[in-house]
Amino acid sequence: LVGSDPEVQQQVKLLSTIKGIGFISAVVVLSETDGFALIKNKKQLVSYSGLDVREKTSGTSVKGKTSISKKGNKNIRKAMHLPALCAIKHDERMRAVFMRLVSKHGLKMKAVVAVQRRLLELVYVIFKSGKPYDPAYFNKQVEQSFKDCPTQAGIIAA
Image (cartoon, rainbow, N blue to C red):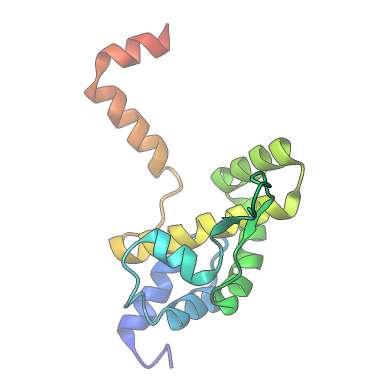
């Protein structure tokens, strides 16, 4: 079906530029969200997929453990698990997020779920922008901000 529609084929190719997201993952996310037809922002997409964080509070116990809600589309969560593991292995930014969370909490699965969420948000942003994934995009933005404000560049260099 993907091969018969050039527009969908282009969208899948665009989403596959993200490290970790392959053909099947891109097709599952596009099909389960109907091409992001009813999704208005990243927060809504994360909630729809069930990767949003909820805190357990009841009465006087206000410090409950947080977990993902799982009240969403389980197919998207399943489709994002292996791409998250692949992204942790091959993408420096995702590996940095994973290592930071593992060192903070000590729970690897919690960090993997956070990477899943980041990847899903990244899929949405890439789909909406129509531009392929650029791993050096963040570094370019930081360099550009330093060029725009030379006083900050001098402070950081010192």
